[in-house]
Image (cartoon, rainbow, N blue to C red):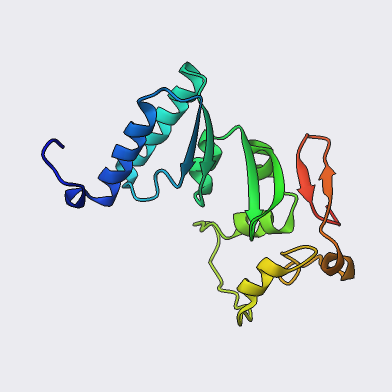
Length: 173
């Protein structure tokens, strides 16, 4: 690495350098936004296992932001699932990812490819709906939700506290 200029590193190398720099002062918390997204699969688990050992050996906390549900499940104690900047479900990682309660979390997990079922593409009319969803009052997921009713457009769902300790933000959760 010595003698290289920043523009001579690959995306994965830059990501690993950034992780190494973050670890130098032994922080109490690390905010990791897509930390392994640009790293090839052979090194991805090395980084994740490093995070786990830091978490266990040095009591370092992580805010792990990712779209990769597999690594989130592997590294996380708790997970907050977000849709359009709003938390829709929060709880223990195992509970949320093995028994999702919010319709968006269910849809998210159903979208993971599986060799057990054939993927069928479902087309949704999306004409500029994405930008409108950010400005919605009420539930931001209501235009895509199979459970949506009038109340969903009028007020944001409150947290429904489940027996297992998780919070589900749905009027019908």
